[in-house]
Every structure is written in structure tokens, then in C-alpha cells.
Length: 222
Image 1 (cartoon, helix red, strand yellow):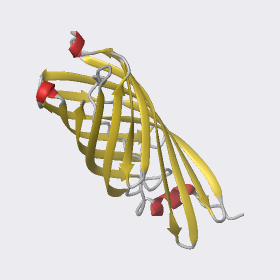
Image 2 (cartoon, helix red, strand yellow; image 1 turned 30 degrees about the horizontal axis):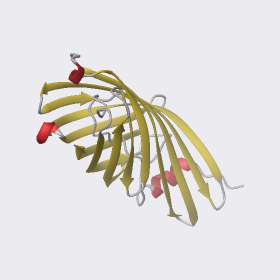
Image 3 (cartoon, one colour; image 1 turned 135 degrees about the horizontal axis):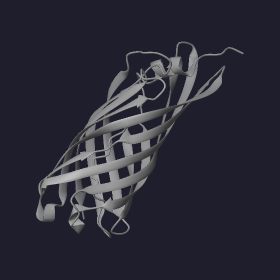
């Protein structure tokens, strides 16, 4: 059977299809109990072309839409759709929250990303699926009621599945991620949140395997 490395397929496929997004648009404060947050954002996404060695990645624009809900004073959860083709879901537990009198805000999350792309690469029909398991830590500090800085280090376990008309293969990689941004809070009861952020992820054993996301998003609590 002809064997083709999945990283070669990914190189060509991601030039024309969707990739996973690392955007969060969230500080470490969980959504207040009983409240819902709806938001939308845009940004750029650079995903790698080769897991095995250094290679120029493919940059594309992305559109994000998300919905989160506060289930208690410490727990929230949400879903995010990233266009042109990715879905994410996560939940967070808030250990510290400045709105409860703590000096800073701290939350631990658990989530997953899924994206899929199909197309043709030379003479091969390809179907690529990416699954990410994420364990992020959220840290944030209100420098003023209207201005928040936040950081989101994370662990990522990534699985890449490639199916062609001649071969099926799966590869995985452990990654670390770091990023964060600034958030402007405004409107009645500071219910509107404008976030500007950057995130970077890199393989532990393959440092040439990187992914980068930038974004600007507006969320509203109601």
C-alpha cells in the first residue's frame, strides 16, 4: 500500500480549508451565575504545514462566534464556532474572582476543539480531521473596572487523522500554549467586553510545529 505522511497532506490541505482556533476572548472571571454571554470576533490563524520539520505555515482569516453560560458562581461553559470550519466546547471552574473580593482572578478549564477539511492534493482526495484536548489556566487582573489584562497558558494534546483514497493514518503531538490579551469593559454594568488577544502553541518534542492565533472580539452579558 502506498504510504503518504499525513503532514504532507496537511501542508496542502490547510492552504484552502479551515483550521483549529485557539482564541478565547475571556478573562479568568467566569460568566456570572444565571447570565449568558454572546459574542463574535475576527482574527488570523497560522497553522503549521509539517509536524516533522520546520515549514512555513498557512495563514488565513477566521470568524468566531461563541455562547457561554454561568451555571454557578464558579462554573461556566460554552461553545464556539470558528469559520470556515471548526467547533470548540469547554467548561471552567473559577478558583478566584475579583468580583468576589479576591486580589486577582484564576480559573481552570477543560475543553476540546474539532476541525475538518476535505479537498484534493495532487491526485489524492483527502479528508483531514484535527482533534484537540485542551487544559487551559486563566489568569487575569482588573487594572480598572473598564480595563483587564489576562493570560492563558495551556496544555494541548492534538490528534491529526488523514484519510485519502489510498491511505489512512493518524498522528498525535503534545503541545504547550501561551497567550493572552487586553479587555475593555464598558456599557451598563460593564456588560460589554472588547478583547484583543494573541495565542501561540508549540510542540514539546517538535518545536518546529507551531500554531498562532490573533483575534479581536466583542462579547455581551445578558
